Length: 445
Image (cartoon, rainbow, N blue to C red; front, side, top):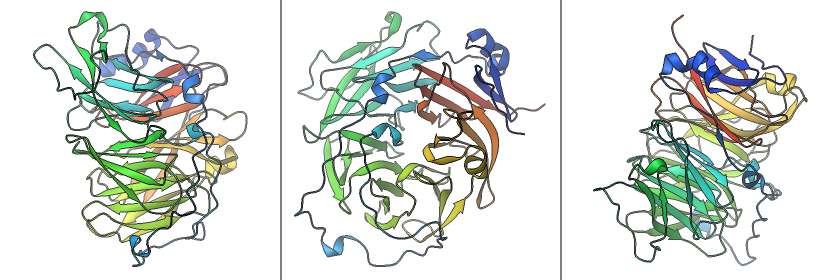
């Protein structure tokens, strides 16, 4: 039976498919529930929820003279098995005024430490190091270059750099310690510092700004797993950019005329998924940079994640409670793939939702978290947690629901830790102004 938190309760963790709920958030409750198992407690972090609720401006429509060359899209058909649920067709641009409905990367875990970064204000990012027992207060990253922050992600190969998507470009912050000072690009002001709490001797330094158009709002970014390249896109543009971060150089790439909502590298770095506001999405192979176009008849791609091997992409759609799993049938750089629907009967029948808002898949492939649009009042604002099986097709089993702190709290953004050794670890920014972390623990009874 799926776990359901009663109204007024708050969830603190999962223990063997049981989502534990208590009457109020407290470190003592968390310690009793999972502290002895993990040896630590993830305290909730306050932030300014208004920043994540702000609607972005409507992306500019493509100019009338933007005509795509005939040879920019491959003519070879994609080997696909598509149910009646999907059709290859292009839909009119949807209203993108509420960018927070899209699965932009507003929460990111350091791959090597228990250190969390998330968008915590209109122009700022909060960094909380849970391993530093002296750090009672988180570190705040803010700078004049960094305005209208939309996304954040740790660099995967080092865990010492954070990329922040904002208006006009991408701010790159690097951790600095005595004897280990990062190189700062000329032109970045020396006032671009943010000290670690309690005078640990370290600080964050703004080392570079990857600049696009001054009017462009960078709303999506994703590092290639080796950390060399960074993909970024704007809700105001139909092109995405691949940045060689060490050189500070970006190469724009475009397919189609609709503006871009999200980008996702596969774990191996062989593929890049680029989704657009009009419901179309492309899979790019990153050896020769060729792509195959897809389109959904059930709205835009509202969330996307890859399985640990990078052979399956799981997508959610704004106007449907059915997910799509795209299975690559050959090794890279082949783009041969087939698509299968993954049903979520509880979302459509029990919750009566109109579609999936956001989706996150644990890097181990064991847990899936998703939020949904509308639904019965009893379930509104909850996050559904699923157990995932891949043998070899993706199948889901509902574990239960997470309820956040505060009356009527809704999830604004969430993400899993990619390398937490003791099981899936989910962090959620709630509309009530708290960022909470939930260990999803499977342990011997």
